[in-house]
Length: 430
Image (cartoon, rainbow, N blue to C red; front, top):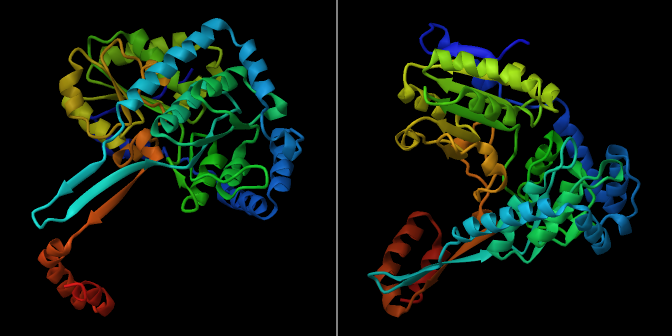
């Protein structure tokens, strides 16, 4: 099979080739924006009728509004069909995810400044959150846990989950994960129509305040278009991993970690950066060998050929510089001493340090969230956390003395801006 693109910082054309690698993450699909706008308009105008019509068209599932929601009996039956070992794994993952996110919860702030004013900041949960869970090419119970548990830890009172059911099929493990995460409001609706229903509301599905969770290009575009009406977590792109490896790395371990991202979908990206030419060659050979054993070899192979890359660098310092330019969703540091290298990394959604911390562990049971910034957005964005389900309100309490101390400056600033009522609002109290 043809391999990934090969780059070397020692070659004259490296900057041009690296720029092309960065530009290749633009996954815009022609026509998606217009199609999604039409779907959103239909649901906003017609509500349940549009949701039912679009679900029949895209998911081959005829539904009436009374069948949008997954019943408690259906959830119970699905849970009964899940093997005990998987229930135990979901429970372990849920406990670890909850513990990590509970540790993130911030404290309120209250202080009294030198002027005597009392100032503060109060955290509070959102009222209602919508969670989108993929259900097309693959169904991800782990995504249910990662999205729902932080919302519950934050104190969100209502969590509504949408998951597509192509042909009427729902993954039992997804429903088991929802029950374990405390989600009981579940709709067998997917695609842009699900995002529209959550954002605008219908007679059957009440609107929410924020929508989180990954989906395909149509779901991502729908979230982009409803932003402002509701909050969103991010615009999720294809999954990606960057592995930085030194001579101590095992080629087969690095290879399977690259393939673990490549098997997500054909647009996923797996990149290796190493100063060791011999390791690079051994990893590529191991990828070819291991690829032949994977059930999703066609998907992973297409991803590796179209978007994979192996970059040779002079040293690990240069590797860190390139990593910051790539700003990867997942970063593995398969090196003997990961801590000093990690200290040089400014931009990464999640980092995995050392040979025994594969990214796949983070996908399921480590505890930190696996909903992460993609397509280089780790330059300015972070992974999902309790902060996505909280908002902060600042407050001020001022007595006459505090007003007298700081009020005159407010009057002068208001007058400078030509806002007389602002100035009088303060001066009348002095």
